[in-house]
Image 1: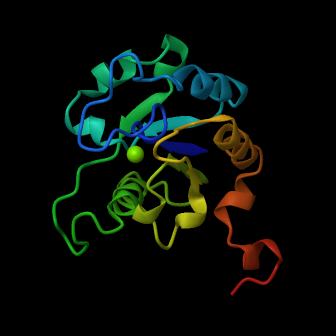
Image 2: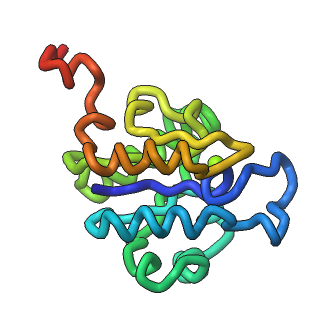
Length: 164
Ligand SMILES: [Mg+2]
């Protein structure tokens, strides 16, 4: 199981157009890490745009050492290819990572507040509210997704045995 992790709107509330206040930054990190410790097989790939500003080493340094060890990489920043920038960009980057890593057959979820940046794979997203982040409700949905990835990764028709 691969978890694509966003930061803003997940590990702390989203602050539109301004930096996250220092006393708010990573306020939900402990909650995220506690979930991860209950699912030790989950690999973490950072999809947040923070990857454009900080190295993987710096990104890992925000996490506890046991969780940092499980962060295996980041998605790549896209240039304009066939997908216009900002249109389903997060999904584009996620699928590009899975493809380039030859891991398209593995179960995955995206923990993200930007549900609108996913289209075809929106059923893979455990969505947080942008101005809240990973609250108790989102934690509950994240745990359900990790316990039963099939339920997240398959569209309802497939789950019912009616593969279309
Ligand atoms: Mg976000």
